Image 1: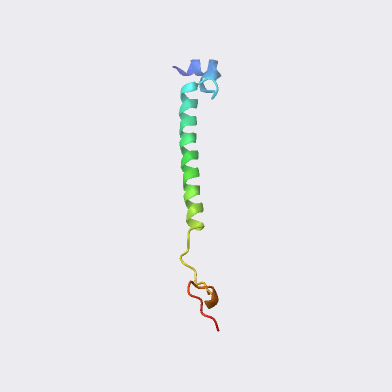
Image 2: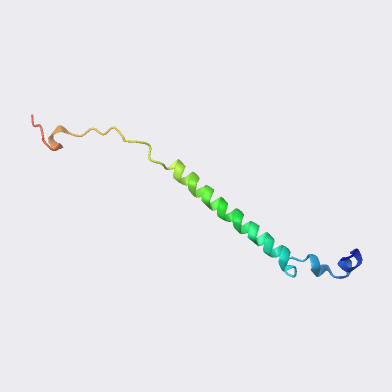
Length: 69
């Protein structure tokens, strides 16, 4: 295409009329969104991860073999 045809027909560069460029753009947008959601989910799981076994004080009368005073 020469420059004179591009000036006459502005639809060539329009997003809605040029399906080749719009489909490539939408594909990369979709890939970016999927990667963003995956990384966001991984970060959320990492920040709310299990921190380990807490130190719990269990009363002696509630054990399997209770010890009474």
